[in-house]
Length: 131
Image (cartoon, rainbow, N blue to C red; front, side):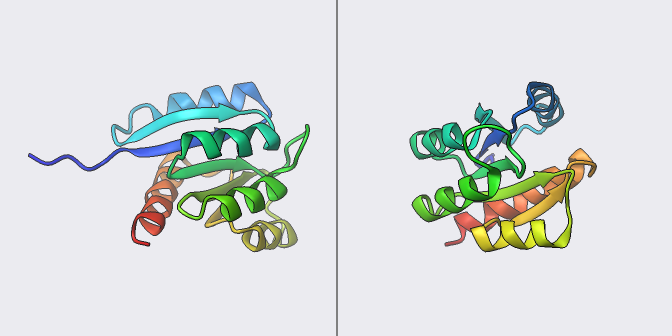
């Protein structure tokens, strides 16, 4: 029996409780491997370069060092085989547009269900593995 490859996911959010919650929510999905986390954009850019995940879950409004839009732009420019999914409570159109212009594959509201996030992870992973 051939098993599907695991999707390597990196999580970026400045709130440790949100990161902990996402870890717990994604744990039951056997094909998702959380390979690392960061609390700011600078740390995210450096870690993604080193760890080479397939998908990055990126908070848009990071409080320290570098925001999620700038980090997304750097990650997608430096790592074309990494898909970034924006996550935010703020899904105003100009914020979503800025994330897409920075190279985000998709932008999700943090209020969406874990199944929605998991589906987006699968779509994002497929988009970089097909290239």
